[in-house]
Amino acid sequence: MNMEKLKEYFAFISYSRKDKNVANWLHKRLETYTYPANLVRAENQPKDEKYIRPIFIDTKDLQSEHRPFEVGIQQALQSSKFLILICSRNSAESTYVNQEVRYFLESKGGNYDLVVPVFIDEVSELICACNDDKSEAKKCMLTMALLSPPPKNKLIYGFK
Image (cartoon, rainbow, N blue to C red; front, side, top):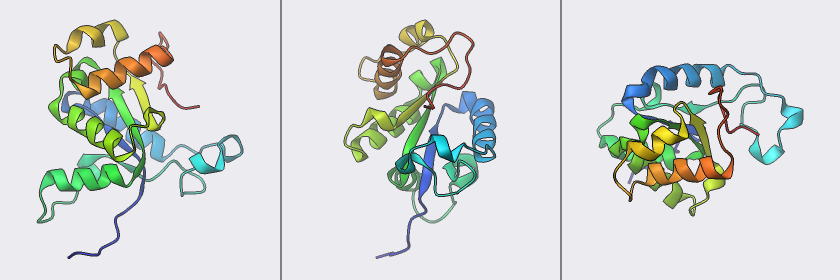
C-alpha cells in the first residue's frame, strides 16, 4: 500500500479541453493574485499567506505515473477544497467535466457551496447545450445560475 501524502489543493479547475485557453489564463491569474486576507474568512483562506494557491489544473499538475489517469484526477478532486467550474456550452457537453463535478460533489457530501462557477457563456446557451438531463455538470451550472445569475459582462464570477 502506498502511504504517500496527497498534495492538498485550494481548488481544482474543471473545464472542457475546448476552453483550455480560458482555464490556463484563469489558473495563472489566480495563482499570482494577492488576495485581501483581511476580507476572507479564515476557513476560506488558502494555505499560502499571500496568493490563491495551489490550484490544480490537469495540464500542469497531473503526474504521469504508473497509476491510471482517472485515479490522479480523483485524488486531486478529493484533496481540493473548492471546485472551480468553467461554465460553457463545451463543459456542459463534456463527459470528463460531468464526471469531475459528480465525483467532487459525491466526495464533499453534495455541498454546492464548494463549487465556484465561472460563466464564460450565456446561461441561455448552457440550457440548450446539453440534451442529457442527467448531466451533473449542466445541473450544477444551472443551479449556480439560478442561485445568483452571472453578470452580463462575463467577468470572473463566484468569488465572495
